[in-house]
Length: 323
Image (cartoon, rainbow, N blue to C red; front, side, top):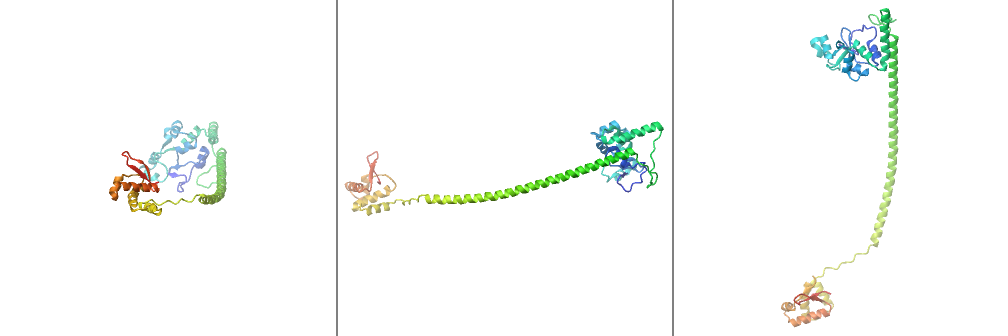
């Protein structure tokens, strides 16, 4: 079994080159396998697709007799027997693929509605009409015989179909090339636009950076103005301690006797923390003074502005606090 591009294939014996014949019939180049006895077989899916059939199986069922198609595996087995797998390996075709011979291909062409096949079907009708009228249809021998056997001139109808198909393919190639060129032009224009946008973004970024720098400088200047306008922090007095309180009273000559100092030293630790309830008897017991003397000392402290009485608790004990 041989493919159409196999250089080891035996010389063709057909009146017309089979590839040109199939091209004129289907409007496309179709894969082909040729058996050693010269019979040509074509993948049914290739033929049906090129002819516009939607379903290959239905196309075979409606237009091709049962003996006009078979699977590639059955075809190879009928030719090569037990060496089927080795013989068909490397052809790029599946063993389950349906194959049709040239007669079945022509039946599929006659059953299709593809415009490209119309000239070929017209020629087939002319061949049948000529045979009906004269009983024969013959081809003219080619002026130049280049292969063993006899070569024939291709019928004008088939040749015209091939020329039209080649022209269509050429126009399609030109249209494709033009479309590709237009696509490349669009890509170039898009790249140019992106470059311009990139430059504009770069300029805008530079401008924004400059504005941000100016705004930063303005913010720094405002911070400096606010700092200058902010009032100086008021120094906080150190926490008051009994020693500091006694020293303050002494500096003001408020403590004039040792008795008064003793009573003041007893009251100072409590007064620095807030109001204190002072029972005169307790102070007398702590200082060794009489209650009357403690009373006089407290009155002295109040008179000199060291302490003041802010009230009394429930049992009448006076409460003293710093002024």
